[in-house]
Length: 105
Image 1 (cartoon, rainbow, N blue to C red):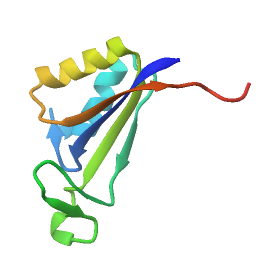
Image 2 (image 1 turned 30 degrees about the vertical axis):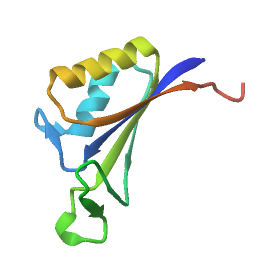
Image 3 (image 1 turned 60 degrees about the vertical axis):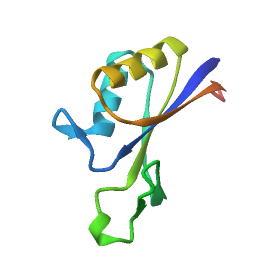
Image 4 (image 1 turned 90 degrees about the vertical axis):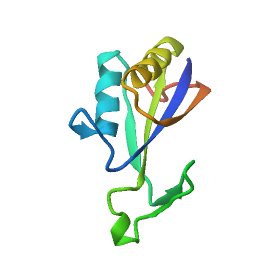
C-alpha cells in the first residue's frame, strides 16, 4: 500500500493545550482516523536551532527531541499537517512517500 511516512519532531517538555505535544499529535491523528502512531524519545541530538540535547546533562532533562511517526494516506497527512498549522505549533517534520504492508497471515 502506498502511503506517507510522516515524522514530526517535538521537544520532550513541549506542551500544547495542557498536555505533552507528542500526546496532542497522537490524539489529533486518532481523531482523523489514522490507524496508528508511535513516539520515540531520543538519547541525544541537535536541531535547526543548533542546541545540543543529551540525556547525560541533568540541566537539559525534559528537553530531548521526541519523534512522532505515522504511516498514513496522503489526505490524512495533509489534514494532520493543516491541524498543526492551525494550532500554530512550530514543528519540523519530514514527509516521505512509502510502501507499507503486513507480513504473515
